[in-house]
Image (cartoon, rainbow, N blue to C red):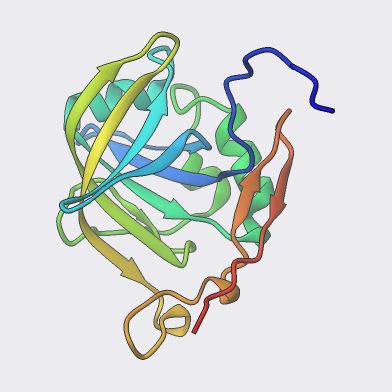
Length: 178
């Protein structure tokens, strides 16, 4: 028998990403799990951020961001970037992350992440507690060792991370159907 549990705002599990952004003078990283694919042609993804977050202002100013896909070795970094404010600290410096230049955007890529998805904001929608930024994907970079010969990404080699609830992260293995 099913039991009604109200209207929780979450769809679990959610992918955990590290979003890097910049206003041209200061760079930042925010951990997000409110992320998803919204269109395949043109390719677009959404990220949702509370307006009070430091990264919200940086993305609003620059109208671009990078979705960096962390692996299970980066769970502590994900927690750090999700609980510390870029107003107070330089997260790249604190975590010894290497900034890579994007091919299409000025926001830095996180070199330690196997996949970096560069996006330009097409639309910002105020939803309530969060604003959703819809970003058109303008470039995807991936480490060669995680790319199949056909150009697809081998997620089994990445051991991606999912957010479950109450700041609980876990790696989720995704298998490719050949």
